[in-house]
Image (cartoon, rainbow, N blue to C red; front, top):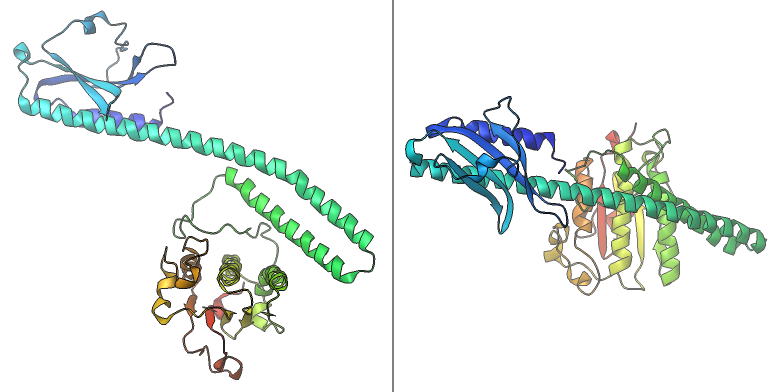
Length: 378
């Protein structure tokens, strides 16, 4: 078994901590191991005190096969599985072992067994992770070719369409989506490189392509354009009204600091919810304000007593009961908004700010993503 250095150090520290207590002269820990079709053996993991003499295995030491009043064996057991044994040698006269010593050694053996169990579980998880990484690599490799082929066929189709501008625009949108999928592939490929997990965000975070080219300038407009194009296409497919910005304020056109790229993730999440839960004839859209973004829909109005509950992890509102979902989308969207110094809320009484345009915005559900405008830009 390929044991970690930290595990071996932990075992030695555990044995040392027991020390020369109550007549104990020697502690030796063995780990059970067996290859398929062979007899189980016990491998020496550590001993106290640390001495120069080389310990041999139980099978090869005849003296260990003879009982001694100054020696006892304590099983290292997890449920019904024997993980190893602890050998204890003492200088007690006549093998008169105090009950307190026996109790302490049993406690030590339980602790050692738990350490072994955790180490085995760690190794199994590493093997699973390595297996999954290899599978991801294979899938990425296999997907590259059909993705490239789709782009080739789309380019050929545009040539055949000639002057049919409407059809060409649809094919161009397909090519843009193909590029987006390629970015996802690049994101998956990065899973095999050492990463620092963003623990503060949570395990459920949506995987959107990051800004892979750090030299590439990003703006709020450049982040939202692909999302709005997708929304426009969805609305056309559903034959519903769609509203998007016709004017982009200066703050949406200035270069963003990299960490604010999550704005795209928040907006994409909100629009996905709107298309999923609003009825087919309900208008959906996005409006830009002086301090942020409004994502609205004309679907079933979220009830007042659910205004805050919908942001709780796992909660699903009445409009979502018969739809697929996990109840984490709005929870994560607000969490991300807060982490970049903004806020996300469901607007009450249709009052967002005092501008005439937004003072009386008559929409049933309005999610307001308020952003730290002054801090956004590089």
